[in-house]
Length: 142
Image (cartoon, rainbow, N blue to C red; front, side, top):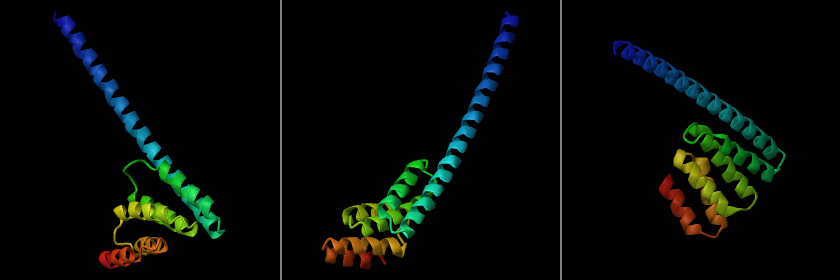
């Protein structure tokens, strides 16, 4: 009976070691995926910036959207904010004012004090003829 118990303890120890190793590998893989996703997002953001400088707004917008999709769900809020800010500007340039407002709202969730994104949302609202809302929005946010 004691011999069986000893083997059971040994088996539990081996199982625990294996489980610990699997968790470590899992954490390392998630870290690798996160790093790869952020690096990919940064690269796509830079590509978008290059398109913007060439006045290729649709291509820039596509790069920024692709960059957002590379980011892990709840990390790198600064990069996420920058991408939403850039998407807001591209939407303004493409005269898609409703999308500009949507992107601005997403960005504002990450940084509600940034004057650029607040101005861009106000501009989109005014382009849609929502002047009072644009003025109220800017005055209330500042």
